[in-house]
Length: 81
Image (cartoon, rainbow, N blue to C red):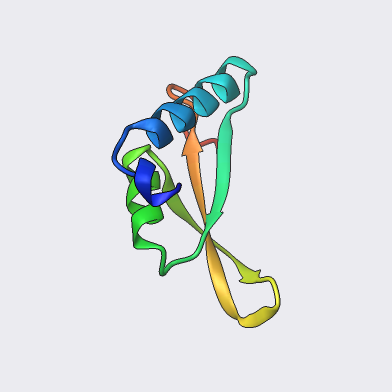
């Protein structure tokens, strides 16, 4: 998000719309990847209901760095894992 738009609610509105679309399409789970040092993104995703899954993936071009997978379950879907 461009700095001038931070705090405007735009990111939340777009993200909420994306999740609602995913749930309407029948998806059970939405996954995303985030760098563990991106505190702002981690806070946003956690507030949106995402939790760390325990899965990590390498950062492209930096094999010694890992990113975290975060997961949100469709409301009422249960974990199913």
